[in-house]
Length: 361
Image (cartoon, rainbow, N blue to C red):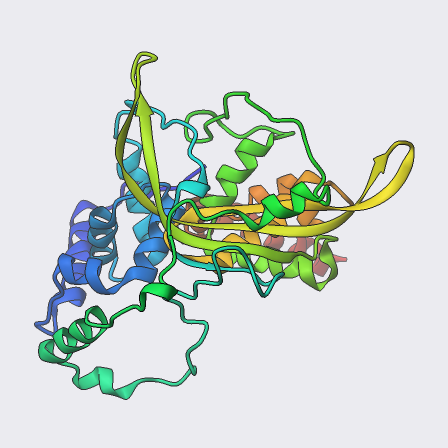
């Protein structure tokens, strides 16, 4: 639906915009877009994911323009995205080809290729680092040099490309419920309006561009009993995924890589085999731009829940998919600030009339 501002008094609106700019610059300080791009990794990843536009530079500009307001930055990038031509669709990409920087499993201690902790906030003490207040450019260069000078013993170095999937080993044992390969062309929710019932390609697109807090909250609700999907995280992998395009049925062309978080969760499920009920694992899937593991895990919970409809909130595709979109939800709530003079006066007069008639009785 997407509400935008209505036309009002021109001078008042211009003054409001000038005041907005003044609030950003009144302290005489400024931040370079390059600095945002270099130091605000988590912000950028969230904005790119929710706007469905992978561009760290544009996300940094949007973050600066919106003064750190994620919802507004997403709105700006979505609006810009709508002006761009769709020249190509990428070919099918396999996360097994990812250049991995982080890969963990909560289901198995020992996995082929090993657990790769990589960069993560998970192992921090949640204490404010007050030394950041006085951090200087020299401090930054020193920390950078210290990390880059670390020598990795040859015997401990790991191949970070073509790492096997944890899921593949369960599949070899016949412990994962196999489904037929679906080679149908996925629908594009940015080109066609979502209708119900939806298919899985539409659901995954809506989930990956959903508002991070909303996706996580709904996933959490599922764990608390408002759904039946309680997974074990089989594998979380974060890294750089190569992207290719194909022109006129010719060879594929490599156009670059995107940072991606992928999660595969295992959910026990009863399936029918030779007329008997047996226990196997279903898969819940999550993937999003950047490094946002919590969102991807929650997405995997919701993916499985929506694949298996039940009479609980997070199994209801309309309830979930229509309420996690940043622009839709923010716009609808924000439109309440716009003038509703006529409708309110009508309601007010109706209530006054009822009050007067009640007083006469």
